[in-house]
Amino acid sequence: MAFDENTTVLIVDDAHSMSQGIRAILAMGGVTQSETASHAGEAQNRLRGRRYDVVLCDYNLGLGMNGQELLEATRRSGALPLSTLWVMITGERNYGQVASAAELVPDDYILKPFTTQQLLDRLEAAARRKAFLSPAHRLLDKGKIEQAIQTLGGLIAEADSRQRRLDAQRLCGELLAREGLHEAALRLYREVLSKDELPWAKMGVARILSEQGDGGGANTLLDQVIAEAPRYTEAYDLLAQNLTDDGKYSDAAGALEKAVAISPRNFNRLHHYGTSLLRSGDATRAVEPLQRAVDIGRGNSFFGPEAMVDLLQARCESGQTQQLDRLQHDIAARQGELPGGPLTMAVCRAMTALAQQRPQQAETHLAEAAEWIAAPETDFGSALRFLSAAAKLPDEHGAERAPDWARSIALRFADSRHELGSLLEVAAPRPACGDAARAAYAELQDKSRAALDQANQGKLETAAEMLHADAMRTLNCRLGLYGCAMLLRIAENRQEAGQDYAGEMQSLRELLHWLPHDNERVRGFVKRRQALIRHED
Image (cartoon, rainbow, N blue to C red; front, side, top):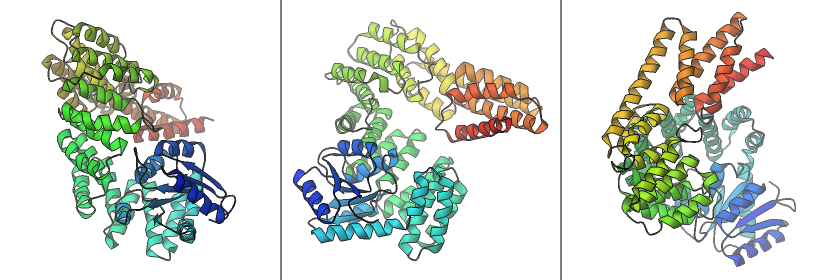
């Protein structure tokens, strides 16, 4: 990268005098297009609105996120292109240890105080290192991921230093895993590990094992990463997520407590820590991290009302009712952003009414919320929160309707024993709700087996019709996925035979309309459907 009058720079520092001093240094070096941001939220807004060649970011940004947490948030949100050079500025002498124990690392860092020449020299050196990967970065900017992976393979082969080879391998592994090419990614990570016991390579393997359902194998690796690099906070995050998936909420909270002690201002980590405590039944302890998450998140672009909803639930369940009305007002002001849509807002009102000893109003709000159980925008987390509140209704105030609500929720969301376990957990105060959820889960199992029996008998069309009808009635994701797989199989067979498959394509379109497109299998189904459409054209 040649630094000149066309180079664009964003300086992120909460000290105005420091940011203006850096601007003056850059101007002396011929870089005149520089802008400043005084906190993480402002930096995020600027990065969303404009592409910068360089970000110079102070590590300590006062309240809210620090520089490392800002780097992680912007990279993962897509607001920070890989081609942007990120240099951290810090007065902490141990920052090298902090950076080495991070999954997403800056391109370089410089210690305060520094001279004009030291800053310019450091920028030039970092730019030279980053230039090695620029052919892949340019392809990624154009969305050409396959070509970028191929290019990185060439860069790995021609790297003239260990660090360049590792930089290329790290990015290549990340892209392979992101594209679902797990076996290729595992081969790459294991090749790295055969020469160097690097935490990021073990993390790569652990992430893939987690996605493949091998939580035990992943957790063994994560324990190793934590032992070798105790400040590698992403290892605690993934370990906690695996424990959460296994229903071990208290253990997940324990892992996150350690990560929060290392990185106390990370919004997502605080939020996850609070919800883990909440799910483990410790609503009183959950209030503090959730309140901190809300306080930190308010000024940042990634912040949505879900953290406030969790805080409301924690305060309701712990009997801390003094701020409920204000929280409700804040949540209502952002109702359009709520996960679960109108159902969640109605549940918030019901939880507040229950906490304030107004059961009749709670019943009214839950009856209103129940109308949205089948709405596409209702997600599992929102449905769980609804059932948790419904299970607490007094006998004389709508409790008789709660089992029917539990059945509807289970039919839609109980894709596996994990979801059933979560439903049974929140339904514990009302055993009839648990019984209804178990019966609905058994019904789903029976429907899946019946369709499979038809398919095994060669009656694919009958099986597909059964799955399509049941999936459209319940909006159950597992039935929908099975239905898509069956319909695609029939359509592809008919395509090869030169037969009409318009009916299957229509049914497939109906299922894909509401199935989650962030699901890897759904993305695969979409690609196969597009291939069939191209063949028709």
